[in-house]
Length: 566
Image (cartoon, rainbow, N blue to C red; front, side, top):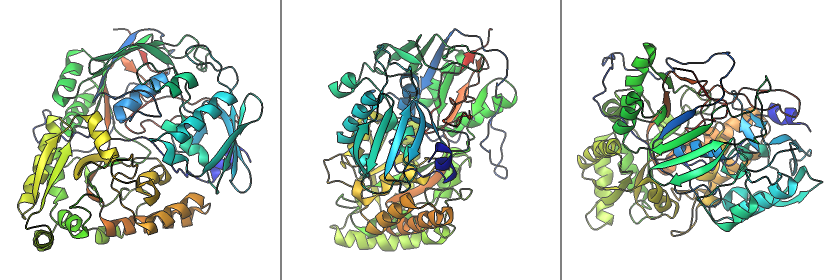
């Protein structure tokens, strides 16, 4: 079957190794905010500079990132939104999402499958090379995939895959243990990266060699990363101009939100990421005046902010403790305080506007009720030596600290003692991966299709404490696994939706997450940056060329950005 048949069956994803963490929630002191208590601010793009002028090649872009990343090897490194942004410069994936959240070939030219979805053929585009000049062929992709399948970090994502073979230089045959409908969606994630296999298997994380539009010049962790134009990049625009347009990008990790926004205002950086509601509101107002560009609308799913509980910790292995914390959390008050009402309170991983949303979660998920919270707190204390105490970790951002303190104050009111522990983002991710935490302020679950997030929820992804576990909450509900497996193999869209809705309701019974709100990372740019999230994908196997999905996992491609003259 052709890639067109694949797309018609819907966006079925099983894995997405995009760990979106390190959220920042704004304090209630935004400058330039014209909202009132009766008319809270709304998210939306503002001041967008997109045009059809002939792009001007050249120029250097300075990008302010929200955090540093612990490396660039997809088999060992954990890429949050900032890491994904850099990865877009250095690597290409075999597949990518279009603007309708449907999968399209990227480094691959097409994807084909047998009738049972137990065998897939990845056909590569000819003539592509790595940064070091080595060819991208079927043998390379097979070796990449086999190595990633063995990785402690990414191996769980490959559970349905049995083996890889090649058919000539450009075809990789993937044999499954069980039907995997729309397997190519997995190849738009971290496991779809194509890299030099000698580098990949070396374990080196600091000198990446990929196929991306830019190659590494230098990296000084926590200071600066410089990448330069790849002169042999395989893509050209519609006029035949080689991509990328920019000569160089400098990525600067600036962990403090106020410092990052000040750098943009002063012109030290040209573009930045932010999850800070204060910045989103402030720059949206400036965008409406034509002074800056703000991008925070998406056609895909948005991520959720929540408190993630470790189900194998001494305290939160007790369902009464999880229930007590849910009843003790006033998420509307939290949203009003930390984001000035900008974001929508959440009851699960899908917003009410999503087709995957189960309306029942408004009733099945415990809502704020201090009397019930106090009742469950007393039950927990009776079982835990008279105490309800746990460590609550989050990144070192001052705005994170503010958000965590708001929750701490709500919980102490019903007798819960949460001890706030700030941790740098990279080690915090490792701490969560290995199950060495009680509770963490977290942000995730924005895959354009829920199969992309299912690896984080599946009981098979929960490993013993000390091992890498992609089910970070260690929620081992077998019924959730059964529903996720059914949805992965389902070709009837209505039945697929029903499976995910039932999964949400079952998850609400377990309470592995204390849901807070639905959010969207914003990208803010000066007006000299053109077509920030407006880009096209290469033609697919049917000759169709699609627009790409604007923001995915808080990041966006960089090959088609260009700079206007002053």
